[in-house]
Image (cartoon, rainbow, N blue to C red; front, side):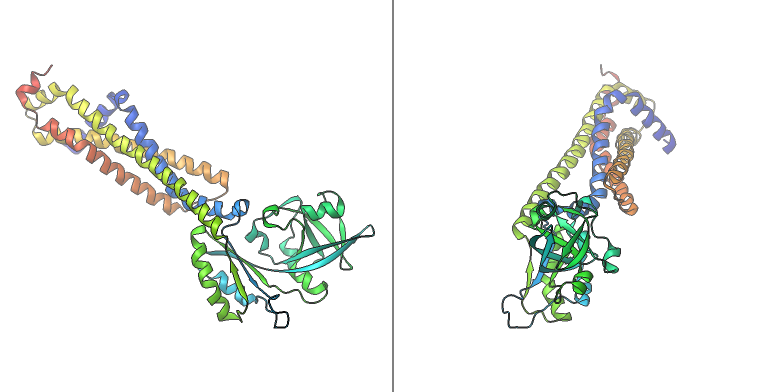
Length: 393
């Protein structure tokens, strides 16, 4: 039998008995769509989730500092810019930020307030994932231009001004006037709600003494990168400057908890996709066996008219492949739709080559599924005796 005739007959049989096959088609379609969506979006969703882990403890952030208070008579150390640049080149590192902490005083309406100032660079907001609850954060331009601006934690804003809507107001800090850009959110979990933020460049210019950039924050791409990055940071620092009194802090307990939760989530997602595909394979086997039984007389008549065993085998096996591959193509279309919707909602764009790879894997799996589930029923059909098949009721 010619290949085009075989395909035409098989597709016509699948369409003719579509009501019998709809459950199988649905299972394979959902399985392939889930497989493509999970694999294609998995990396970007995971990275997007990691970027916002400040909400559950900031487990992808590594905090490095120099314990300059251990021995006040010894030399004080701070992180050099070349050290930060070298750490930023470590595989798995997304961003690095330098910061310095120092006490400051502010006066308003003849009242004095004492608090800590966090002097930040232009990567600080990207690394820590804070956001403005009112007004705006300190801009990159303000940092580069050494402007006299500051942002306040919510608690500090309420203490000084009585409310959080402080954008545009002026505040005298250590006898210098600063314009407040806004109030910073996401600080309650990090203990910074009573702190003020200003450009590191401005703090070094205008606050009394020298503001040391003795804190360094490292944002890892995913939680899987944290252990390895934390392990190599001391050696990288030592290669670029003196690493005396260096401290590297990681939220190990929170990291272990997040990784455990993420593992079980991924496990159940992949388990559900696999179970759906297996059910689709079982469904193909069941419906093909039913098709063989219901078409026993048809098989007998074809054999009586000269059809060979391999012709019957090819026909039923092709029907099984048409069923699995047709469902796979529908799953690919549904998966692409889900990827587009998810990408737009989350503001990410997965690599196109990854989608194409998943598409090919989905088709290969559907091909194997169709062959594996349809082979036995096809063999059963091809081995029927002509006389018994023609007399079958």
